[in-house]
Length: 435
Image (cartoon, rainbow, N blue to C red):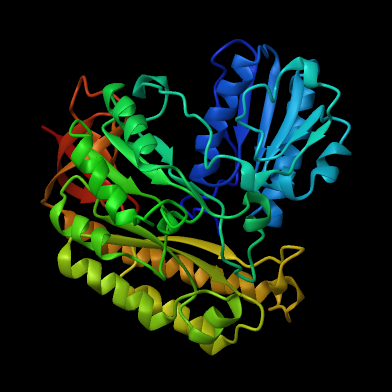
């Protein structure tokens, strides 16, 4: 599942930077980053009245929501140029091109490319393909926190070389491709200068960064280079990482670098070995637990989140119980639970399904377990003094990814760091006072 941090059911909206140009983005943090790059490319191409729908293909529900958003956008802006891009458009361009509301379909290789949105290309109704020849990411616009984003996202990698049986994303993203370290460092320096206290490294399979670059550098080496060469950056965070691999340099960074946020979101998917094998994941239960223990040994305050799929085809009650027990054993505090739904074109879609009501019940149990673990974690923070990134007045995000509601701190601006004293919690977020 591509960059499992916070799949979006409702789209995020990139507010028009010039009258009439808007991006509706579904899906992962990488897609949100690319949505900003797409908006910049469209503006550079001279569009003044357009809606770009940046789709996600991770579930059938994400595709349905995108189609619904397209129809709504056409009703609300009948005269605007409506362009569809993103993973769902890359995988099934004909389905979107057949919609009467759509003017143009652009694949992922083109959505942030200069000239792709030029009006002279209006006769090219569908442009897809060329993924493996495309650069790892588009050019991000250097915004300031006041533009509406509290933290900045930098895409360091795109594509995936794995073949999980439930996932269609490699079809929409192509093979793994890495952004060279020098380009990453340059972009982060600019973002820190623009006022962002926190930068998040994102991608489809972030831990594979560097495998296609000369010398095969590791993600840990990239993190170390960023923190060394970007002294003005106050906090660096990783997005979702694969539980199958965590290099020694990255472990060393967690041990030695306070500016590396003490939080990892792991693409676990299940806590039962046979289910993991049928998913064609590259880790087993024991390896995931060992990885978590290794990080906690060097950085005890690290919190962990995970993506988990409930009701994967053939999953038995006992196997579901193993995943439920894993939440407690691993001490997970932030869960993204996905009730399994078949994705056409994947091997899992041909496997014997679990009944819908059972899938729903298993997902509910996992969410309840996650909520209980989060409440326990929040209680352990009471009395501590922390620094958190201000997202908007009265709301911040701690290093361990906990949301913090705070009072005081007049004059604190989005994107900056706030010193907060934790006074309590409401089982969902911390309650604090700024000082």
